[in-house]
View 1 (cartoon, rainbow over the protein chains, first blue to last red):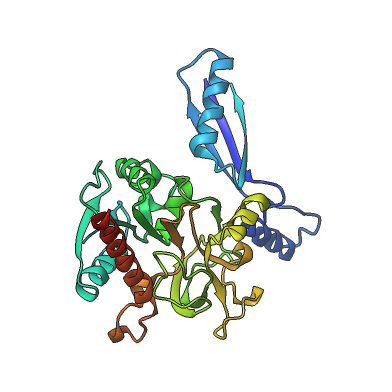
View 2 (cartoon, helix red, strand yellow):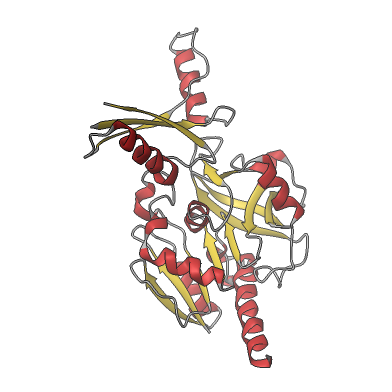
Length: 79
Length: 238
């Protein structure tokens, strides 16, 4: 089973990279963009066929290592 | 006295720390490779600056799994003095030995320059040779020093005098403009609730001798030496 995990800064926490990209997009003429947030993407193979068990495992990985939950939130897809 | 300096893959201020404690302050220093599992015989431990594990994932995020960090946790739980400088501070945060997290500098730049910090609490083993409110000039060199924590934790740090250093102007005024990196409440250094673990972004080991034109950092490292001496004396008396 493959897990696709996205980690981003929590809403409300200033994302300086997102801001810089937003300004760059603006100067390129993309005037309709707002709230650019930059994050990380982690993809991994899980030796697990039970989706519920895989979910528990991925959640635990996110909480313990992949995201720092003081500043970041995460979401994932399993498939 | 024996000061341990932990060496992670990617540490690059470890020898500066060794130099100051050994050659400037005249103490024995043991370099502790990150694979060590014991800190027995050491009186204080330094987590130096650098880019442990290439800052992969987040600064300090991988270093916290080094075998030595279990020993550092035990050492801290036993009341031993632990100082994390720059990347060492980031590791202490990721390891949960200090509360909060580091965000990218507000300006997105890696900032390497002198800063002024105000000693907010001089009644600690890390600042006993400073005066309360004293302004120290100490350089910073980091990209991720924008300290963040939730409002409840911040209030706790403030109420318990755990904020030890705050970025300020040369005249000691703590203003938003004096904060180089966007850090919450101008935080440059905090300690744990027990008071024996300190993390700071500025580098005291880079300004601890007259030859470098600035000795302000020496006050912090020499305070630590005094702190260990006092603790040892107390043991003897008991």
